Image (cartoon, rainbow, N blue to C red; front, side):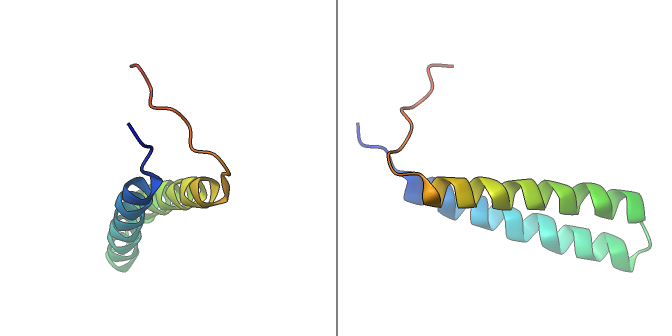
Length: 64
């Protein structure tokens, strides 16, 4: 079974953009705490994308 990081990267990019848009909407509504939480989560997702793109060899799938 080949490792397909491209699908994972695509899914994570969609998730990150969704979190950023929801975070920006929360900022507009004045819900700072929720906005901070969503934007932090989007930042962590962005870091995962960078790590996947910079990885030389893909990780094997988890057994869990």
